[in-house]
Amino acid sequence: MDLFLFWLIFAALSRFFGPIESYLLLKFMTNEEQLSLFDRSNFSSPAAPATSASMSPESRRREPSATRTTPETSIALRARYAIEQLIAQIQSEAERTSFPIDEPVYQAANLKPTQPILYAGNLASQLCFFGRDLGKDEVHARQPLYGAAGRLVRQGVYRAVYHQESSQNEELLAVCDHVLLTNTVPYKPPGNKAYLAGVKNRFRPFIERLLVIHWQGNQIITLGTEACKWFIPYGAKREVTGFFQRDERYTASLQVTLKAVDNLRQPHEKQVTLLPLPHPSPLNEKYYAKFPEMLQQRLGKIFP
Image (cartoon, rainbow, N blue to C red):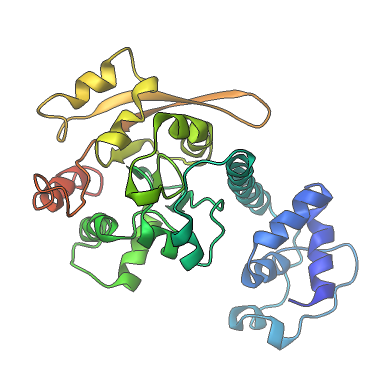
């Protein structure tokens, strides 16, 4: 975008945030988002009109509003900065001490191995799908649950929300408006083997913050044994383990209380409902063929 316009927006944001925070917000915003903010803001210094080349078609049809940045805009920007800060903290932790990462897959995807792929979807949604960790397809797509197993999940959600079938990637992307997709660890392990408990616990505080502080929902469909057992610390002694051993674990639900600590060391907690399902991997011979029906039974109560 135009450099002069960039600094005008930077000056406006600095009224609400510090200079570093304002710069980071602009860095992570797209040109369209920056221009949208410009349309809704009133700057103290005269602003040169943006050229038609630097504005979206919608922006060219409108004149800048005379109102100041709204409280809603300020809240949205703070939320965006906070989640980007969380992602940066995860990467900083990953670079602090080495741990197993499938580096060749990241190199093939032109992605730095320590760059976390934390989540995809809508933080305001009520439902979260919680998987084990990333696969090759997820690294290339830069979002969780994008491979063969993820396609089954997305197709099921699409069917439940839109009441029709779809296998087109472009259409299945619409699922991200209705759910949150994340994993126990935001990295891909070598050989597609599950991360050991030490790695999971190392990144646990960040996943806790995502689920408790940033995500607004309270229903979690866990996919597979490893994903479900990640929640053991949040139930009573042996509660989660005992629940997962029950025959009706894939139709029943369990409430646990998640806990997290924010950047100011303030505690937060949230009660969530766990809705376990088997992992939808093609290698899961026992449940793979049954998974779509099992998923629809879960989703039918969430998206009636």
